[in-house]
Amino acid sequence: MKQNIYDNDIFYQAYLDLRLNSTGLNDVLEIPAFRSLLPENLTGMRILDLGCGFGQACSRYASQGAAKVIGVDISKKMISRAKQIYRHENIEYVCLPIEDIGFPREEFDLVLSSLAFHYIADLKNVLERILYCLKNNGFLIFSQEHPVATAKQIPDGWCKNENGEKMHWILDDYNDEGIRKQNWLIKDVIKYHRTMSTIMNTLIGCGFKIVKVLEPTPIKEAEIINKDLKNERRRPPFLMIKAQKGQSSTHSCRRERV
Amino acid sequence: MKQNIYDNDIFYQAYLDLRLNSTGLNDVLEIPAFRSLLPENLTGMRILDLGCGFGQACSRYASQGAAKVIGVDISKKMISRAKQIYRHENIEYVCLPIEDIGFPREEFDLVLSSLAFHYIADLKNVLERILYCLKNNGFLIFSQEHPVATAKQIPDGWCKNENGEKMHWILDDYNDEGIRKQNWLIKDVIKYHRTMSTIMNTLIGCGFKIVKVLEPTPIKEAEIINKDLKNERRRPPFLMIKAQKGQSSTHSCRRERV
Image 1: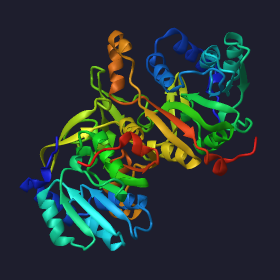
Image 2 (image 1 turned 90 degrees about the vertical axis):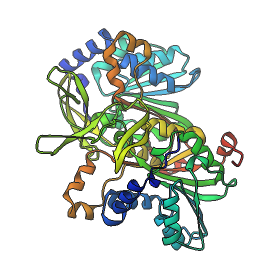
Image 3 (image 1 turned 135 degrees about the horizontal axis):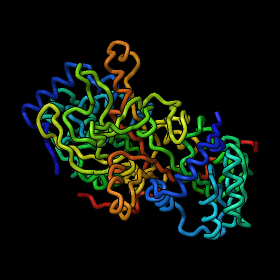
């Protein structure tokens, strides 16, 4: 199922407000950690950004010297905004579900995806398509909601006392993988819960080598300003993985261009 | 800190009662999952079992054709019992803390460890010693308590309602790694909490390749007999990793025999 919540008017506006007007978890936690996994020098690289949203990251990669950046997003609204705001001669934006990508063989040095994989029903399908268009020894770097954050389908994962204080994180249903409906900006956003081991083994099974795993916590400067961020240390909100395509990976996961 | 709870008389007797007289989680969950990671044919293999306890697994490996099995345990009582009950011409039992192993270079095809690593303070030290005595392309297979099970230091990890029913698993303090004191058979057993990412990155940093990750659930036959085992699906009790020594690993982690 290819979900396009970002073209829902209410969701889209709420999402823009969140990303543009606040210093949310993305800015103090997800983005710094994600950047720490990128190669130091992007000069001349060919990069694919899956779930590029309104193109902020694509623009950064292009300004850092990437030879080509392709941003893919299912949302017409997002792609339209990206084309307006983050134009660059080396960036191409494509409105397409991640599940349908079909780029030429060994086209990219890097495939990146920030907080999109928990919306994907068939991870193996997407990983095979990524492998196909990734160069040998190229890297896939992605972040997603952490399995302990997606496991239990509830409006709020924190168990709170009568004063609203966060007592502990509620973990349940961990090994029952599948759809989770969550209220996030709008009602019934569909996410897919997969365990840590399923994510790892799917990567390895496709032919990726796990290079680094992060369960990032907020940067210290932000924790000093916003004490509430300390709660993000109490359970991991995000999972990030850097994986490398091995030279033997192409055989098992070769795939015709779609 | 090398903890030797197994030579505590009360602990030792309680542990034997648990392992010999019940069908606990080990039998229906940890042991079957662990065996699924072993090579199908152990014939002629040289195997090191770290935290071998009273030698049950060593005996199995020997009876399956292993050329040499060395069982290491810190507990004199356990080693003494192993030597009595699970004697075999191909098994050698050594009473030694895991942290102090110093076997010859590239001595073993397999290094195995069942539910012992959460007692180890310095994982990197142990992994380097394992790498040294493991052959190139040899495997380390280990299980330990899952990070979501060791994270919060409390007598019982389940949040229960007034009727004693398990409502959900309590997760907290995940990113604060270090000592956890738990009451298990005796008071104040010391375990070391490490995050999933720390465990993975320590393995990778030493030169291991992650081959498979398991967060096992009970075997179905056992779940039918004991309905309460379904709770073990609600949060992962154990983490198991199969990792391979790459040919380039020896350089960074070479270590003199201790």
